[in-house]
Length: 177
Image 1 (cartoon, one colour):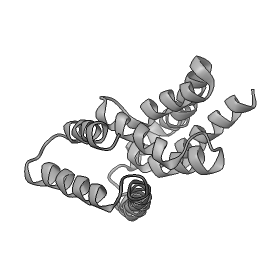
Image 2 (tube, rainbow, N blue to C red):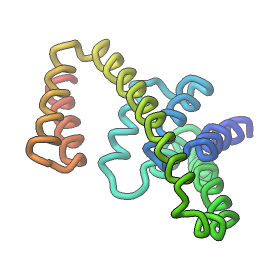
Image 3 (spheres, rainbow, N blue to C red):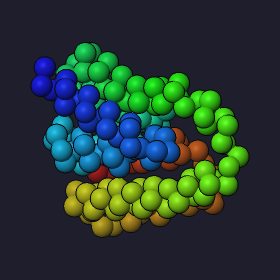
C-alpha cells in the first residue's frame, strides 16, 4: 500500500506543477522517481524515456504506466496513470470557460512566454544528467559519437526521433552490450 501511495505522489505532483505537458514534466518525474523514491536509477529512467519517446502517444502516460507496472504490477500501473491524468483532467474541466475567456489576453501570452525558458532549463539539466550517466557507463567516445550522429540525423536529415532512438538502441545492443 505504501508503494502505491508513493507511486501516486511521484506522478501526481509533476502532474500538478508540470505546466507545459509531458516534456515539461519529464524532469519533475525523473526527480520524483529516481531521487525521491528510488524506484529506478537515472540510467534506467533514461531507457524508459527513450522507449516512451519511440512509441506513439503522450509521453507522461506511457512512462507512468511502465514505471507503475515495474514497481507494483497492474495496480501500480493504474495508480500511476490516474495520478498523471487526474490533475490535467480536473484543471481542464474547472478552468475551461476561464481559459476560453482569456486565451487571447496579452498577460496570459506573456506568462506562457516566461514559463518556456524554465522548461528549457529543466530539460537541459535532465539532458546533462543523461550525458553524465552515459559517459560513466559507455565512455566518452561512444557518448559523443551517438550525440553527434543523433544530432545530424535529427537536424540535417529530418529523421523522425523514433527512428533515431531505435537506431541508438540497436547500436547500444550491438556495440555496448
